[in-house]
Image 1 (cartoon, rainbow, N blue to C red):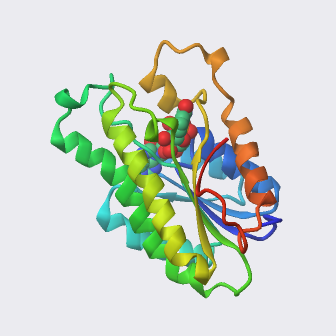
Image 2: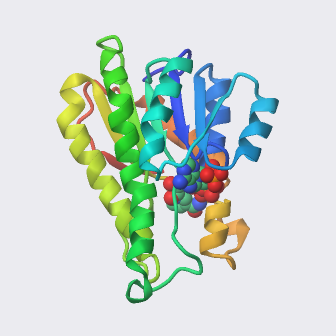
Image 3: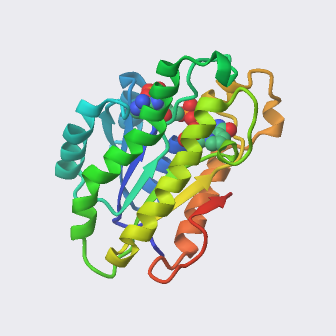
Length: 237
Ligand SMILES: NC(=O)c1ccc[n+]([C@@H]2O[C@H](COP(=O)([O-])OP(=O)(O)OC[C@H]3O[C@@H](n4cnc5c(N)ncnc54)[C@H](OP(=O)(O)O)[C@@H]3O)[C@@H](O)[C@H]2O)c1
């Protein structure tokens, strides 16, 4: 995807942190951008500041919300070129050992971090497949180093991200012949509300600005020839 100009982009979790940084940088690059989040206030504030930005209030973990959301996105934005699933849940904080984790809490994390991206991908895929042959279509699932490393207390989140990585690999293997590619991206440790909730005593100076991770991700996408790429689906920034 060598240019974002006029590309239709959807970003879940687009009202904060990495998702917000991606949305603003993509707008600057000439993309048509729709963001999704639950709380109306940050969405409203962003929409007022950036009138070209489309905002959708929805909870990606809510089964009933996904198909109406996909239909609203498609009618206002059009068929999607790039879907970035960045919305994510840690589960209850302070983070707990797995043995102290309620089944319902694990289930809720999986609904947001795994089933939500799966449902939204399925709902937007028919439109992506209809887009002109030869144009790259891409789904980026935001992962984490916790998908690989067994950090104590990060159980539910880690399990969800490991599953999201493999979901991305299998979707990529199944859909690349039809021109839809997948990436699972570890954006690095960033100074955001999610990181503050997980590690309240972290030194902000040790963390990346999410705008830097966003820039690195967009550069990676721009440099990639998705029609021929045979490299790893999972990447770290
Ligand atoms: N920060 C890090 O150090 C780090 C490291 C590795 C990976 N990551 C990954 O990077 C991604 C972005 O994280 P971040 O740190 O930028 O997070 P963040 O600043 O806390 O932003 C999270 C965004 O997701 C939205 N969101 C959360 N749950 C949602 C739901 N159920 N439905 C719809 N939207 C929802 C939030 O808005 P509402 O609350 O209004 O819904 C917000 O816009 C995540 O996938 C995270 O796992 C982060």
